[in-house]
Image (cartoon, rainbow, N blue to C red; front, side, top):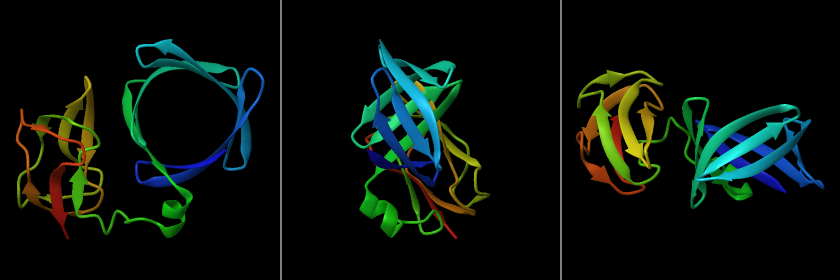
Length: 163
């Protein structure tokens, strides 16, 4: 099964083939044997070749939220048409939308502030995991829609940047 994912603004293609006790993962033309075992409470043991690690993963719709080695990742599933058409590039994107419902933990910028790509704009908490909302491009913060302690829904417009 071929799938397309978006991780930190980068679109990747992976193919997963089922085997008896494991699966064959093909990424960038390279094959790896992979096994995934559910441990309960959203925890999984993932073994790639002979290397094993635990991770926590939560799926909401077409998004996965993964906590691995002290880092949080948002993985968006894309269909082939979306990937081929190249949805909005980071340069065209104006608003940072909330990946899931949550609460604002910190706001690290003010309206009118100039920011660089990768700079932390806001920290949110969803399902006991903190996620940093970073600037996806250079720009000026023109609107901050939530303050520390505010709750929001999935896809809420958190922060808006202008060129």
